[in-house]
Image 1 (cartoon, one colour):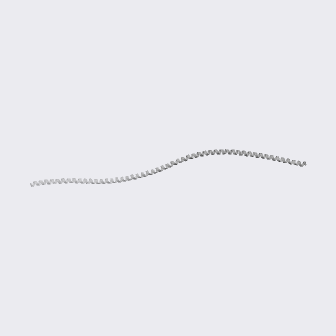
Image 2: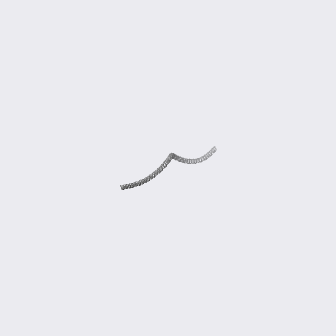
Image 3: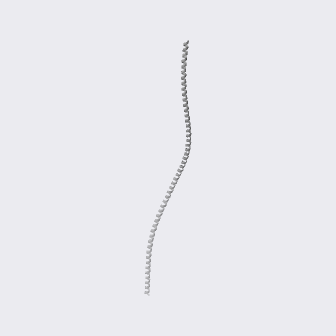
Length: 186
């Protein structure tokens, strides 16, 4: 009976040793699995940290890009406003130039009308001057004729006066002779 117990105990010991060995093997497998998983966790943690850093950088880039876009939009808006103001000023200037051109055309039309009237007045004055010249020439001719007539009359009167003086002298001489004869007869 004691041998049977010893064998039973030996078998129990062997089984226990086998269970311990299996447990140790399982424990080693578990330890390796835990170690591998811990390494994976570390790797995952690093990857998460890298991804978080990348996300932060991407967010910063996105913020910068959004700020740049806002600045570009504001600049474009300001430029558009400036261009619109310039365009408005050019429109006003163009309208002013149109009005000036219209006024210049009206002034040119008035000037042409005045020039036409002045030409007609000048032609009329030229006709009047020609008429006056003709009258002046006629008057000159009349004056020249009157002067010649006066000269002829003066010459004729001078001749008549000479003749009358000669006759008077002759008559005076005759009267003196007659008187002398009368005195001699007495």
